[in-house]
Image (cartoon, rainbow, N blue to C red; front, side):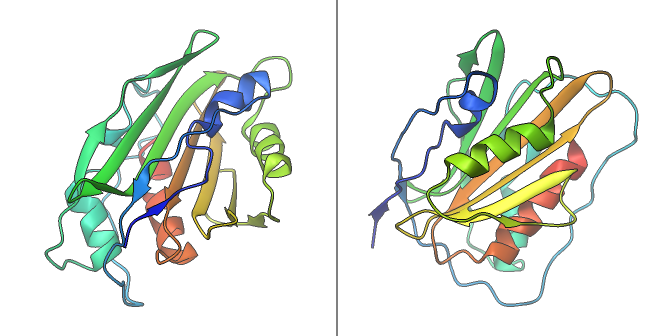
Length: 194
């Protein structure tokens, strides 16, 4: 069964300018996940890392499959979408698909922490724009929230200050059959790599 997401996939674009764009990619039903989790090896050395230039390299399809399916053979294919420009800052998107349907989307961006912009202020602004009440999520970056859209699509937003004066943010969206805990595990793995 394919549903249309009613989530603002380009949501991160409004972090700097205060408005969101809507896009509605189809969503696939990922296989049910059991309660055991699989951890990822992360490489957070504390040193200044290269700027974000794409979203897909932040989470390989093998790692995502292990997190969502606990190692079962149900591969998803990552597809980098064309970057969007937001006032000189790029927004990178990766759609993880199976059978032509999007099962999960990862959005990543980096912007200067100037004029009071921070991970917390960006996440707060996005949370206020959500039509449902966001729930704080601990253990993912400096700040993170989860909420569901009216059709049950899960959205997890996370951010943290990065080396220098930059803020890095991610958004993950997935269908309602994907539990909040699974999105949290995926977000934690991605944030650890940033």
